[in-house]
Length: 551
Image 1: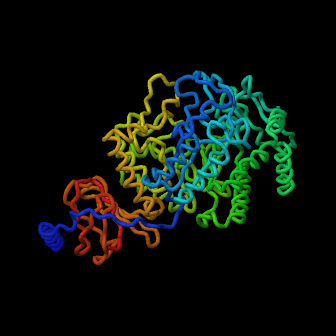
Image 2: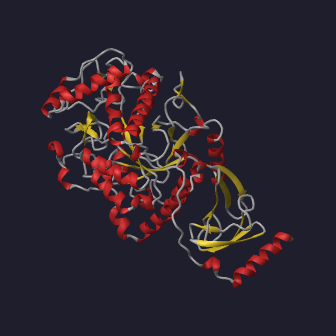
Image 3: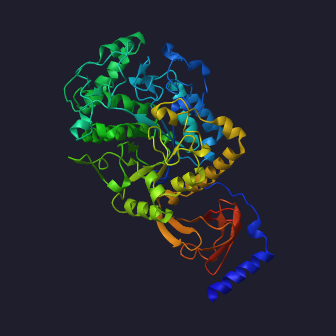
């Protein structure tokens, strides 16, 4: 009876009072950053934004590839342009992960899906150089400076497992560096690691501890570019400091960690993790940490916070349900301890399809706060090489945003998720359909796309303002008229509601807030009125994002 009287009192109050119907703008919050609650925007460097058309045809590359299998002009300057425009800030993005920017093989090759070039960045020719199609060192410095100025971290993509395919212009690396067979059959640990991923993708002999000389083609290239002496000098210093043998994997680690010491990147997404011996990643962790500490010592004015260098690994088909151990059938491997902060979670798309929202949130909260405590997962619903995304037809862009950004864990927003970029491109073969150029025209000119983007922006900004959304403890409050729950991390406390009735809403908040607190719905930009532990809001939306504020 008391609750009924309170509800009636609130309804009567709002019939006479317009405070909750007014929209308010509040100052942007500052919050302590945790990778466990971050929103990472993942983009194909070549497919996001073309900021410099003069580099579109570097190394005599031509437009003769199969559909969406050639370079399309996206570059570092294009990304920087969008950073400066505030696109990522408005989306609530904390970090940007770019596909590899190192120099790719120069020629195209047929990988079974038509002629392809290394537009995606995973066909390395030279780890020490930035591919001219993407830009140069000054472009990367400007990008990182612009991002850090806005509190956005930068992740590059590390490939240690393989070189690029062999072509007439791109010779195979020496036999003490790579193997060209057998091809992996993925039946056992060995047949996943000591083999080539696909035909004509030479596999780095990462297991080797034998001293090897630099490949002739790399020496000749560096000499022609006038930097052989400097590169050799740096390598000698690296091997002297570490005491490592001059084995293939350690050369590559040196080259990759140079991007940390020289540019101050904040992390690496690591490619094809399960196809390389697990001890390699513990060694890589050590060298990344050393390089990050060197950068901080040399650039104290550029330090964003006290977070360690971030490593997130792609163990293909790893699921949060696996917890710490990935099972190869004949061997289980823990990739977290002494190596990765996080692994990409391939499971969320199935969870969202097969489970109720309440069950998804509870499952992720339980695992992250128990079996994976101290580590994280990177959740996604769309990606560049997953042919079965959650919503390939882009019929549920609003639900995609709601579930991706509100599920506990780190969130990976794949470029164009927020704008419902088409994933069904006619004439493409395989994963090319997932990699069309960013649909900027629709973002600027189509009302429905603008509405979708606004939904992503609201939840994204709220998530960015409150690390508790992704990294806090989840508690169910109510499921009577929609799902209402809280997320709490230290003093950061929020209440969230989804699938609520449009119009008048009564929300129990007594487990999180006091009656004297000033509460604000970030989604509708309206104040809430509280009485006896119940908040009232009248908004035309089915979602509320409640925070405590000072008016």
